[in-house]
Image (cartoon, rainbow, N blue to C red; front, side, top):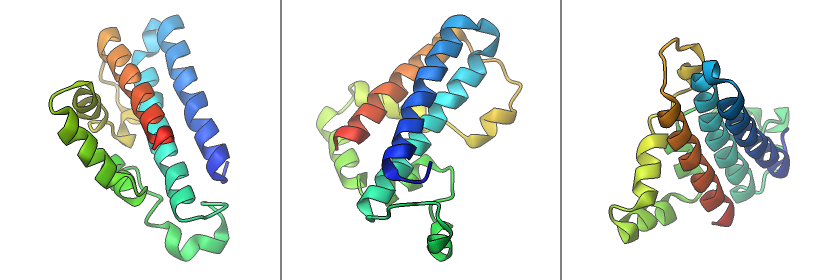
Length: 142
């Protein structure tokens, strides 16, 4: 899973899995939402590897430097990905459009959601997954 393409593939597989979980198992709505958020983390890490021209982001060859990337903070990962300025420009250009709504939903994601027993509504999870799908597409295209 270490190459940028492999990491990105995993991200998109997670998104598909999140959608399938949501559509087929109403009792696992919160798991679907967590998995979709994790896809954002992965696609940002694939972008970091591309930006830094690192063929294998999680290789022990980069152990000294990889601690900066072994985080779950999406905003920091966005910064390290090299897309931060484009992202901020997009938010400004779109003002109060869908892009800002998507980010507002996604930035709340936290890796600790995997331990959460809090319920999440199906509608909230569906909106979150939709936002993740749009943002992963934007990351891939930029």
